[in-house]
Length: 375
Ligand code: NAD
Ligand code: AHE
Ligand code: ZN
Image 1 (cartoon, rainbow, N blue to C red):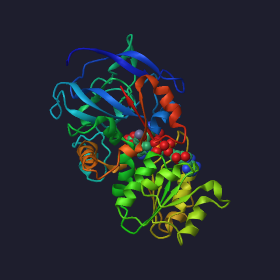
Image 2 (tube, rainbow, N blue to C red):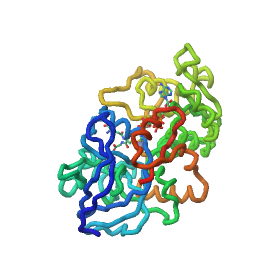
Image 3 (cartoon, rainbow, N blue to C red):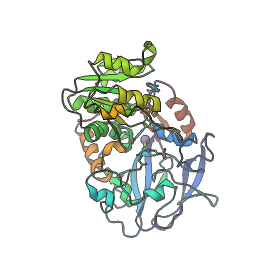
Image 4 (cartoon, rainbow, N blue to C red):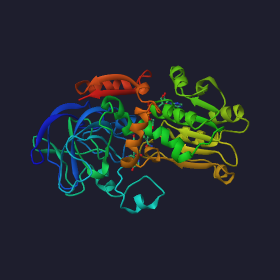
């Protein structure tokens, strides 16, 4: 209940790059404006590996990683009105308070209410963690920390979803799939008949392909250095492939030549700053728009000749595909249940929390899109 400490299993990242350790973790009760969730399923996203690697300037250790999950509300703190115990939910790393300057702007899905606290691994009310191991505090991560059987999140970070949605599938709607779909639908606003290039055909890149296909794009060019990705990518709408390793010319030149001057839209779904440059420069003069989706390490910077922008190319970026999390994640879940968007097709592996280190090893192999862990 609301005032009891729960002891449960969680995967703790004690230090950057050191194997995660399954520990008995104490999870404190939710305070005012907080929700304690029993996590049933969590997937692994490349961003978890990025922070674990020590290259994320916001990475703090020890912490509990994980941000693509689904579960059931166990208890709620004072003043929480929008969810109650038993509700099926998806924790959202991008909050939506509906009251801050960002939420009210109508211009962005970013929310300012809890971001400063989540960026330093604590809860807003008392700037403390709700996780500990034998009295030692363990930092939260992205305001979600889903590699734990129980987690505590801010109420503005909880999307209440359809009670019949299969949680072992819709956990993916906590990050990768919405990010790719939304990059196309919300950030780029791709029109029917457009030519699109997608750099990186992991889950995010494939979701971009799916979004582009549903938007009616004509040519959907997938670019990846792993040719094994090409077969699966066809199922998501990619209809042409380029492997940079097969060409001597810079990849932007290859694509410009293929498309009579460049694509209308490009998406970088890797997190590599030289590919980000190529993605911008393969866009058509006068209007081509490139969207940065990949997360690059601390210290990395992008560059190009300003002339690229002077001559009409546009450089953009997207967080969670521009979706307003609490409002639109339930809508995405309904779309999945109505078979309007894919989710199952991204799940290539299922494992249990205990085997999380092996799951991360798999992630770095080509055959893996999403691995879902049962907790
Ligand atoms: P992933 O590792 O599954 O996919 C990356 C793909 O890029 C792989 O297929 C790999 O073979 C390919 N690749 C690597 N180097 C390449 C190169 N030089 N040229 C062409 N292809 C190359 O990762 P993912 O889970 O799909 O995530 C992709 C990126 O998006 C990550 O950086 C992740 O952190 C980021 N991300 C951002 C958001 C956001 O809100 N902006 C959300 C989710 C993930
Ligand atoms: N802490 C990182 C930033 C990481 C980042 O950009 N995260 C994306 C989501 S990745 C999900 O897999 C995001 O939404 N950013 C917006 C935000 O508010 O964090 C760093 O490099 O500093
Ligand atoms: Zn993610």
